[in-house]
Image (cartoon, rainbow, N blue to C red; front, side):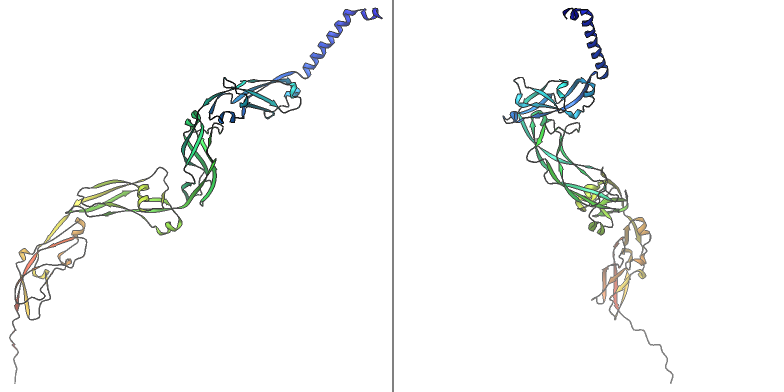
Length: 421
């Protein structure tokens, strides 16, 4: 028996070795060992109150994400998904060097057959004093309202919120905002919206780094109104300097689109822009910022131009033109003449009548249009100086002097009728 076992012993051992190698080769060909790499696996922090309960804030300097390398049989590795792995940094394990070991768990069967390595192996944490600062809330709108409508404004339930976190994290906040979707809207609405802190590049800051004191959202009331296009009319107030007049008013644009409640738009037929010309003796050129003007004179309306809009106005002011008339007795009426008296006008060389106004206005006015007269009511026989008055009510200015009138008793005309008997 012993001889049988020892017979050709070397050959038998060689056969066993060859068989094992052949089995390993076949196994490796059929189900080889492979390596799978996942990058940027997020690391979850647990028990952070270990730091915050001591009155500290913290900043993660490294280890927010890790790279996983998984080595194992292809048949097993090929079934893996990134979500099969979870990485956790437990702050209970924070060491004196401010490092927290990162532990990776795999939730699949036969996980113990995998060789898992991570990089980095630790989360680096910087302890900082906590900081809380106030920030105003900005409303960011997305989308477009229905055509013919306009978002006139947003009202927040809280205009200032408190942001807290580590000193460096809070100092990295540039603004706090909420986002409101306007797409297709045509009526006012309200809603609750999540607060988000943004950095200088406009990127959201991780809520693990900063948080909001006592609230994570605010209510926003969004007002949407119909739009109406209205003509612009420029008018003047006050009087130019003595001897001057407003010759021409030019302005652009001639119309503007406004948003307001329907009840207000129904009452508006134009937007009147008033310019003060009081005491002016030169042409006025002015730019009127419509947003400011509407806020002052048409409260409740909103300019739909996003970048604002101005009205350019030029008011030409010129010296008054004059026309002087030479009068005759027939140009002046004697009013309220007693029945027993006759009136005779004389000294007409002092009866100066001058009209002043724009060149086009005075060109069309004749002496007959002025309706000149003097009033001799309650006068007896004698000679009087009377101021000329006029009935003209047109746009030109009339300056009239005085005349002398002699009132004398009427002389009876002899009866020249011949009577035949």
